[in-house]
Length: 130
Ligand SMILES: Cc1cc2nc3c(=O)[nH]c(=O)nc-3n(C[C@H](O)[C@H](O)[C@H](O)COP(=O)(O)O)c2cc1C
Image (cartoon, rainbow, N blue to C red; front, side, top):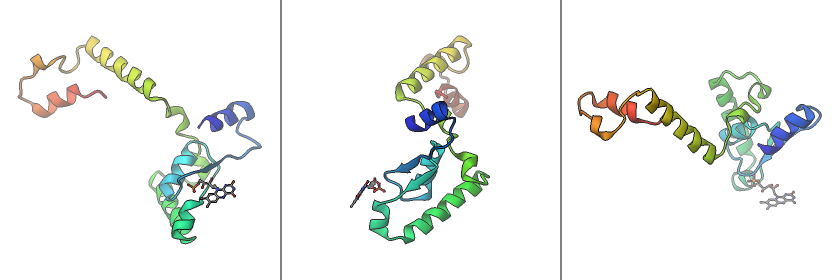
């Protein structure tokens, strides 16, 4: 993720290629690296354990992923997750902010005291964090 971001900002994502490697065994693993900006992925242990047939299966799974999301090419989804990637600390901060905002406009239950037990599903939904 860091290297993909640097390649975008410093090289305008041109002239260089980024390869994702480490723990790739399925089309889903490959898709995750590509979503984070990889142009290619590589496999070592997976092929040692399961043989070269693994690559064929990986390609089929990757194609299924692309079909499911209506991506026509690798470039259609390469790096699209970069803008959503963040740290756990940031997620907690954003969650607290959302809770504060919700309390400010008094949406949903504010405390256990407001719990009536009627409309169980609705009340539960109003208490979840996102
Ligand atoms: C038995 C074995 C030998 C490896 N030999 C090399 C090597 O000679 N040069 C290299 O750059 N990486 C080598 N690697 C590292 C792999 O290229 C790769 O970075 C690493 O295994 C992580 O990917 P994987 O999860 O698909 O195995 C080797 C890995 C294994 C398991």
